[in-house]
Length: 288
Image 1 (cartoon, rainbow, N blue to C red):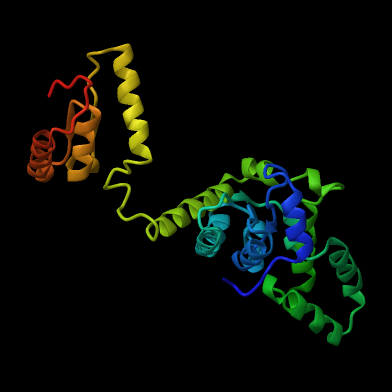
Image 2: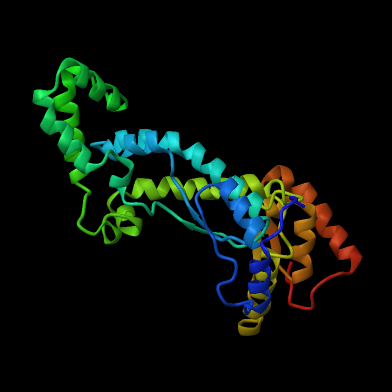
C-alpha cells in the first residue's frame, strides 16, 4: 500500500513471536512517526505528545493558573490535530496515549548553561551580551535586562529540577499539581475522537442510537433488569427518543416508552406505530 515492506528480519521474528507477546508496540511522538511505525511494525500503540516547545515554555514559566491556561489554549488545537492524525493512521487499532511524560525542565534551557551565562554576564563585553540577548530573546531578554531574565529562568528551571527526574514532577504527579494541563490533553483527545468518528460513523451517535454497540448494552440492561423485576419500567429520554430507527429499536428490545422534545413527538408516534405493525417486538413485558 505504501511501497514499503518490513525488513526480512522483522518478518521472520513476527512469524515466530506469539501473538500475545510484545505485540506491535512502538513509541511514537507525532502522527507521521506513527505512520512509519505502522508501516514497519504493523501496529503501534503508544504516543508521546506535547512537543510544542514555545507554548510549552510559556506554560511552564507561568506563575498563575490564568497565564498557564492562556498557553494551554494555544496548545489545544495542536494536540487535537496530533491525536486526530494518530487515530486516522491507526485506523481502529488500539492506541495508548502517554500524556506529559518528559520532565518539565527538559523544555527549558539547560540549568548548567544558565548558570554559566549568569556567571559570565558581569564580565561580558557588548558583543557577548548581544549574543546572550539573542539566545534568550524568546523569553523576553534584551541587553539591558539580561541579568533579570536569565536569573529568573535559572530560578524556574531549578524549581522542577530533581536529582532523578525520571521519578519526579511528571506524569500523574504533574497532573495533580496542575490539573488544567491534564484537562487540556483529555479535551484534545475526546475532541479528536469526535472529529475522526464523524468520518467513520454513518450517523451521529448522539442523535441515532448505535444499535450494534451501545444498543447491545441497552438490550442487556432490559433483559437482566426484567429477570430481577418483571414489572420494571424502562424507557429512553433525549434525542434518541424522537429518532425513528432508535424508537423502533427501543420497541424491539421491550422498552415501555420513549421521551423526546415536543416537536419530535409526531415522529416518535409514527415510528412506534410502524414498529408495532411490523410485528418485530421483544417478548419482554411492555406496558405502553
